[in-house]
Length: 298
Image (tube, rainbow, N blue to C red):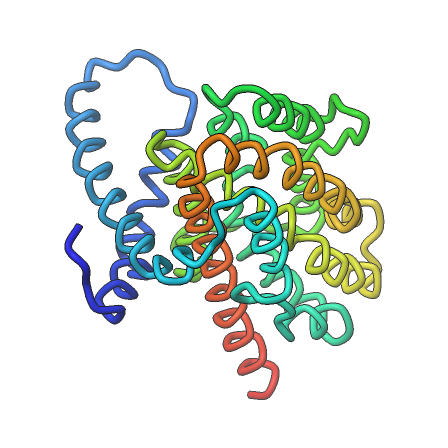
């Protein structure tokens, strides 16, 4: 793809109409279906959307390329670089989360969570898609992580059901039409990286950086929900405030290190995925603060 100015890249990456269309398409293509006489027309639509999705991902890759190129290609150096994203990555230590923990009322917390649920692409499903054809230690660790997410491992997380329990308890029903563009872009980015095998390493980076950076945010949201009187339903955040720390340690040791050792050029691709995911998060937090704090002071 021809290099483009950052302003053009930004429009491609965070265009509202595009991301609504892409979110609707992702919902259709990932849903369980059945044989249909209109499959040819559906494939034609899929072809057009797949091309558009590819242009989007390539524009996003171009936007993070310079920083990703600085990632070391030796295993120890890369893991150190990756772990440093916990402090230096886009969106880290955003003041939104201290405000959610200490100040937000229930209506504000519900609005925030509605946006978060809308942008949730399903960590367990993303793991399933990403782990295809990886081998060795990386495959074993991806499988162990997935087993936890499905509630079958020692941690018994049940990621999806716990998030659903929270959504039902707080009467959260996200709609594409009322979801902010950065939240849609986050979910669309995660799906694009996991579904398209040419971005398998980017997906590894994006999923790994979630494990790395989620605990701090989850702990603040959990504190806010506890302050507001939410009990068992908040356990999605309670569990992820601690479990993801363990997952991150093993992810970096058992997945990132051997992948970079086996294929040093993959360091840049993994770095791209991590930076894309963090950039999406940073844009979300900025948009959430703008909406919540502007309304709070209106």
